[in-house]
Length: 447
Image (cartoon, rainbow, N blue to C red):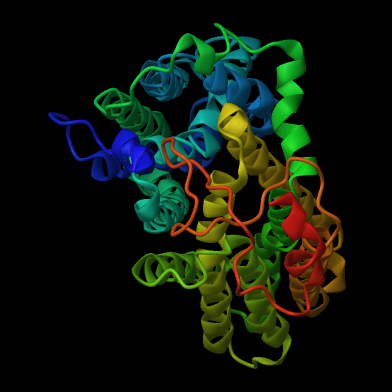
């Protein structure tokens, strides 16, 4: 029972999960809304949409490029509460500074500030999620990850909407400043969480070693379940990244202007409902990697039916159904990272995984823009095909020969090791499907 005791919230502190979710929602809403706010601000104050695009790129590229360093630092630092809370607060301060400086100082200076903010951004996504294993007992983690997925969904809906509404009603500068204040408030909330400092042995010194920057990537290659869910979810994001372009084409096809953003809103609302449903009843939580694959397959079918829907409202329902399947998918993806990632590189695994998904989504959007001349039907079928291909990739990687150090999925009832939300090392669960022979036969010797 040591793991439950050590991971439970310490006496005298606020309830961990509500505080965490509030902070995460504020920080992620600011991150999502900043992209809209920066474009509006550059257009309003500097009359330069090109500067707005450059600012968004400067903010977004470090989400991927800085993920290994941010994750390695988070895994190495002793006082995680100060590191994560301070990092999120600094991101908010940077947004507020951009709200003041864009259009009033040199472009290079504001671009450099956007890059600096982007370097902190991985802590707002995978970095924050990696803290849940330290805050809660492992028997509450599946529902906690579903609730965390809800914070991502809400941020994706509310961030751009808030930035656009406030920027139109008042000014983009004020909108960006409000988003920055929200992120800073989230960072300050994180400082109230009772995260005990790591020992010197756990922290591995004061900073990451150069070789340590590759440790998380090595785990994503070696560990079979992590390898499967990481690359399967990333390939699936090729299709999801294309959906905004597909939505524009479908809106033109149906001559329904509202569908340009409405279809993506339907997708996001469906994802929110799926996350809430999975939080209420987390089916398949003992093998989250399989939930990821089923979620990808479930996402493919509604999207594949879109070309034959015949009406924009039916298309919106199909988008919502596809989004619903991504809710459990994302929750199970987070649970897989927590379950299989070694504690020493857990944050790296979270930040690298989030960075890969962002990269594939951006590639999907770029490919869809390039191929937009094909029309809506071929592109939406392509998005569905990406989900099927992702299942094939994930299944192939999941059923390959186990590598050294990879661990089978744990069952809470047996042989649990101590440690905050640590992954127990047990024999393979008895519910393994017959179609997956390595899980039932040759791999039991490695358990």
